[in-house]
Image 1 (cartoon, rainbow, N blue to C red):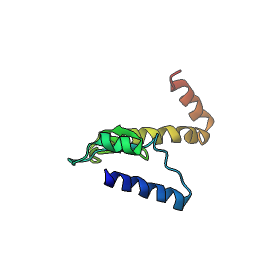
Image 2: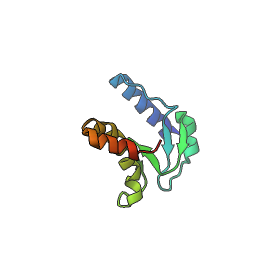
Image 3: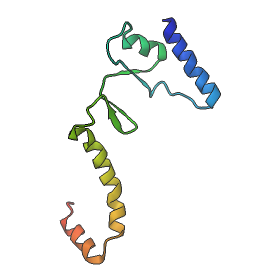
Image 4: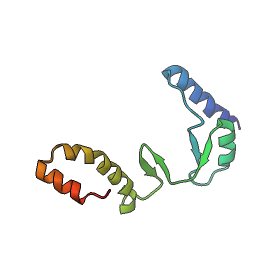
Length: 105
């Protein structure tokens, strides 16, 4: 329990030193491996949620195999969605007509 209080105190010191604020309601505790403490205890002390691996952090899944194709599918889909409007701007009139005709409603 003392270790958990120290972690929380370190996080509070970070807040004061940086001027940033940690939103514990949006944060989560993820247990990795086998330890003495349960994630329930951590979540209660830190006032945050529990989560299991695989967790998404900065848009990438943590705890998954990056060598697997499935790992990169969400990243590729997100990039394709962002590129689609940009690509449309640089199409000539004939290419735009083809795109409009072939796109689903």
